[in-house]
Image 1 (cartoon, protein in one colour):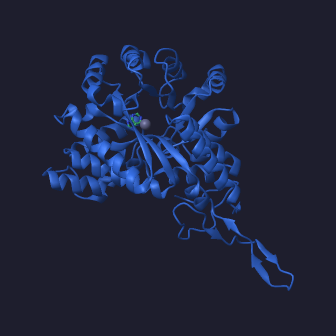
Image 2 (image 1 turned 90 degrees about the vertical axis):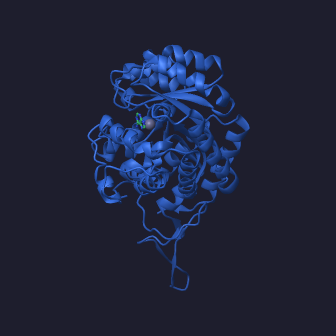
Image 3 (image 1 turned 90 degrees about the horizontal axis):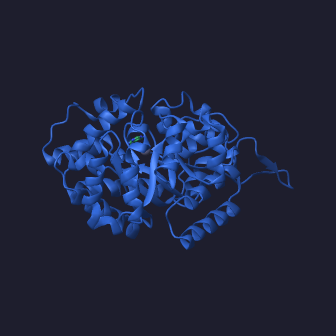
Length: 383
Ligand code: ADE
Ligand code: ZN
């Protein structure tokens, strides 16, 4: 990530320990000691403060964590020929002007995922990275229809991911919950069929979501299947207001009765909707580097995250599809903090929002909030 301008600047990139602060000497912060010697004021760099801050990731498509190197490795072990000559050629294709440009290559890439081991290894690789970013909990999406439509049974994807999640909790101490997303470019009958297929796993799937091509596929198209999911006790989330208009955010609230809005950027175009989202304490899972890479914003300095916080919205920071958008969880936090000059208080609020907006039990949320307070109190000034 680039070092941007703003209220907080990183001053060093030393070897941070995984959960703690890495202390740095900030230029211009030399204090004169009694004997005239200079002592270094203890400060923590912004990246280290962020990496050590306990946080949750609530908007992560596991298929979007498929790195080019992994894509070639999975293609190799599954005997698949990729239409790209090298990792570099594949990465060079990651230039998107809009959501659909990305989706086309993302669905193509997912074709290398064939076995339970592929899904488990994909999840584990993601969890290793996000554990190093200071994530304590993740609520991850998967797109079963992307796999069942090419003959990979629901069980292969679900069991592989659940195995990776269990291993990550045991070995890395990162808890997680799985969310099944319906592809909105397909029809509601296909979503109903997916919900029926998911039945044996519904005690291990926390909720359903709605993703893929937003414009032209409003939430109203899926009101029936979301009602069925609600009747089964599942949590409900939906992508809305990424490229679609504020009316789609309203539909997600009024017709789908969602517990969270994924993205929600365009809600800011409607002042009454903003007041409602604030009043209802609706969590927005915001994805800064995704927004930049998909041209939802032209520049991170224009990203609405700071405005969302000022308007009292429960915004969170997330990576969306980190292998395609240039950064995992901490890189999103660092880039947007530098671009917008987020304060220490903003960072603590964002971390707290990530747990209060999660589907963890209240006592778990309380435990994480206490850990955030303890961490923030123990940290020196951010350089
Ligand atoms: N599927 C994966 N990433 C997505 C995004 N950012 N928006 C809609 N659908 C997606
Ligand atoms: Zn998304």
